[in-house]
Length: 206
Image (cartoon, rainbow, N blue to C red; front, side):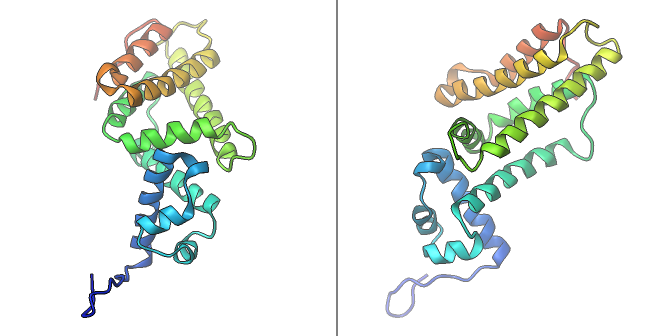
């Protein structure tokens, strides 16, 4: 918007709307440049703010990163609903997650970039990803133990090792897909890998 003198003026937006826009821009910036190379000045400029204006909404770069990661988690939680699927139904859910991820490249790229960066010393997302992987393994172990208790998988299945392999497979496929999406079918490869691990087909899609 411009005034009569032709100077650009900023439109004031509700705080929640402005924060959502900043998070979207930060997500895109972190995904393409990484956390270390992305700057608050760049994010502020893209959002049409001064750096001081950006810091009014998010007091630090680390705080902005936390907001971006929280936003990503909210997406995952909304997909699961009020209660996660049980047993092999949860493994089917993972395949469907891989399918949905093919439609949200930005979130997949953000996760891949920040997860890799988080292993470096002092990275602000280190604790987040350490906790996330620990939580994912625990959920998968529970689901596999539920399936074992229901006779859906062999009784001697090493559920902890399987859980780690499934997570590693999904993360590795995401990197391959980001580099060459036309050559990698994430949901099909995820389903094949899981079925080979557990020795039986997954339930049909709901």
